Amino acid sequence: MATLPSKKIARLTSKMLPELTAIRHYIHQHPELGFEEVGTAAIVQRELESAGIEVTRIGASGVVGLIRGAGRRTVALRADMDALPMREATGLPYASVNDCMHACGHDGHVACLIGAARVLAQMRSELPGNVKLLFQPAEEARGGSKTMIDGGCMKSPKVDAVFALHGFPDVELGCIAVKSGPVMAATDRLEIDVRGEGAHGAYPHKSHDSVLCAARIIDAVQSIVSRELDPLDPAVVSITTIHAGNAYNIIPERVEILGTIRTYS
Image (cartoon, rainbow, N blue to C red):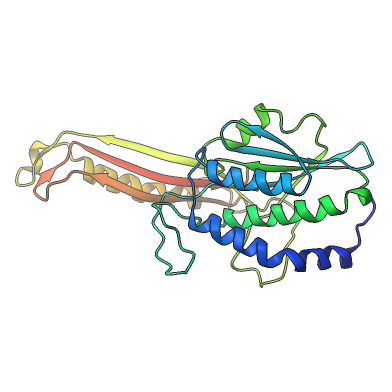
């Protein structure tokens, strides 16, 4: 494919940057969880249509834009839109006003893709192919990508390649980092339900202590990466929440352990 003029792209981007920043701040202030991104999707649809871009909706909050160029091949650019179920305590003037937060930066991803869409729409006569814009709901381990694919986002026209980005605080401002091989790990949810037999804390011998069992499981889980996997095969297993009982003097019957697994293979 031909190379688009970088100076023109920079000029167009600089003009719209203040408005894109305002859009990002608004989305950050009004985050929505997976498959609930109705307000965010409405903003995306409004911005795409105002730029003269064809828009198709998938489900309640999936959005697909299409910029038709001169060639037959099609490239897709993708951004995720959902937030995380956590309270924001940053104190920023555009901090979240509800009980979830864009702690993973998806507000920025949406703003970036809206900006790219605007620029490419103004340069459509120079495009040697089509560009699809995929705004995906529910990236945070809830199957949003499957919903988009099942809804036909990779068809009509058929997508030949997909590109995406992710914000990284460790990368210097104004820089884009690229590397060969995998960059973002696959994620799996870890759930362990430990069930024993409860008893009064003064009579532990009459219990099958679920808390003690859970503690040993948590300790043993940390040896999976160090002792079960090839040292050259990166992986992470993190236990993140433990729920057990509600009284200080009662050994509970049940302990719930949750965590996350990240792998490249």
